[in-house]
Image (cartoon, rainbow, N blue to C red; front, top):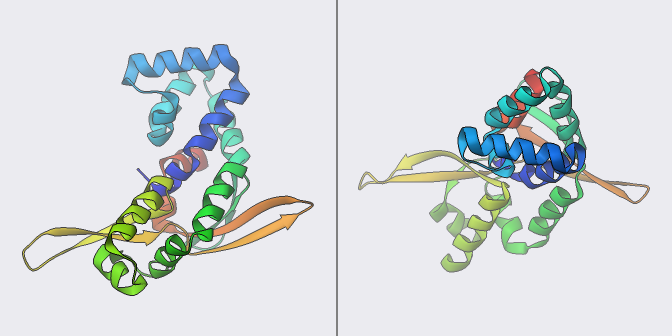
Length: 203
């Protein structure tokens, strides 16, 4: 599952429920459970499953609905072959990002892995954070989708150790007429790892 999909999941769940209405949502949830044994929120993280069920209900109209759902949360701006610019508009996602940046420890962790993916011991050494604190903060960033796995290394005793990097390379906060948005840059591997973006952009 991609970090970006995790970041979008709660926002999309809320948007789907608001836009489709109680009866449609109930029918879709019933079908998702019959077919895959999962809820809408779980299906968002495996978006191809939600896409198949939406097509059962709405046919080709599912394409337009999915784009509408995504555009409520963010807007894609093509940049170049290596990076993608994304404007985050959803207040819940913005709050998650701002709260992470406002936490000194989390901000230091994200800065430490902004350019290159690193194993936790290297992040620990660079940030000088206590071991108990760093694991808790890293898990929180992973759960929010802001920190993603990016490869691994083998230690001398042949243990496989995961490397992590920040989901976004750069970000810029914009406030226009009291409305906040965040422009983020995401490397293509993180962008293409998103099932949501792959399906919705392909459609």
